[in-house]
Image (cartoon, rainbow, N blue to C red; front, side, top):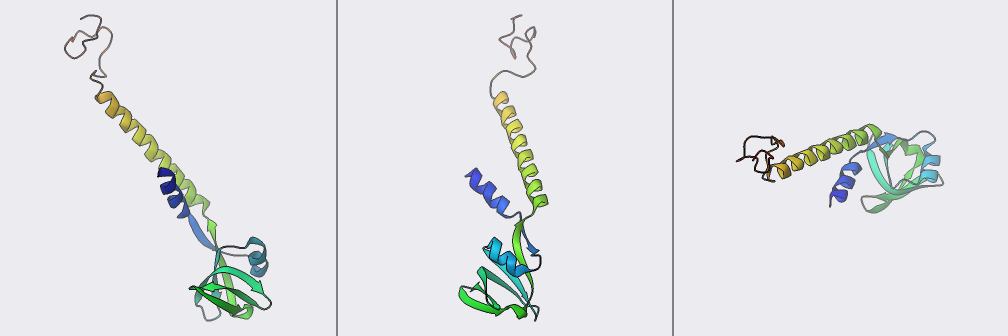
Length: 134
């Protein structure tokens, strides 16, 4: 369950970044699951299973097959891992894990019945019954 939560968090460490030109070759070689196309009228279309066929980019938009002429596309962006966000999430997760371990350790020590201030020569036999001086 924790692994699933961590995977969900790491999935949030993705960002959409412009694809370098020529984006047609990027789409053909990388085969991203989804891309964002900015059209000449400034609308943005999210396309899944995109591929270039002739003078058009084809794929699935809102569950329907779509074909957009290459001349109507001004920019293409694709999801990429954001290294900075990923590092911050991992560091934060590590800090939370370390704090949880320390807290659990203190809880376990607190329920052991022996105060942490007891030493081998402690004169207080009520709080430290295992003391050598009792």
